[in-house]
Amino acid sequence: MARTNTVRIGYARVSGRSQDHQLQLDALDAADCREVIVETASTRGDRPKLRTTLAMLKPGDTLVIYKPDRVARSMKELLVLLEDQLHAREVNLHILTGICAGLHKPNGQTMADKMLFMVAAMAAEMERELIRERTLDGLAAAEAQGRKGGRPPAVDPDTLAVAIDRRKRGESVTAIAKHLKIGRSTLYRALEPHLTEAPTA
Image (cartoon, rainbow, N blue to C red):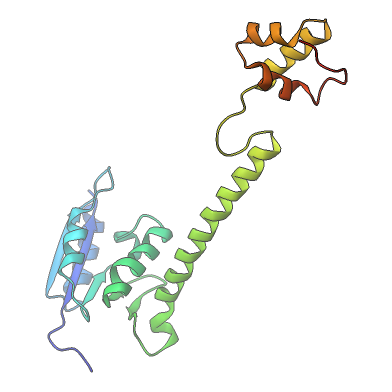
């Protein structure tokens, strides 16, 4: 059933360039918005008025923007906005200019209506998968270099090299362990793959 009393709210983010400012406002003024909220660009990237605008929107309402870079610094940020803030709350997005121009409805009947929101969901899933893959790749690379997740090895490669050298010169494992401040049994385990002769005290 069609919703009644839905509203269109415009959002403009402007910099110090008066031409940029006026282009957005002129377009939004002509787009039948009940209200236009203007935010001044911040070097920190904060957008408190965008948050306020989103909080005002109800299911069936429409967020109207001049072009996508007014609400997001990157495609990823735009897709997150679409999926988490608009699609989840059944809010439409009307982009006034650029290659994505048009009214995008999360529950629209045509593929064109749904396209941005479908891409948003796919991108979010892809990002989660990439994070998982990067984590697994990092663990595999660490293991290939002799490191494993969890506690670091008790005998690092430099310390082991010193212990092997001293052992080959006839020094007892007990004396080496005491000198290196390592447990005797720990040092035995570390030395075992590297020395063929039976260890002695």
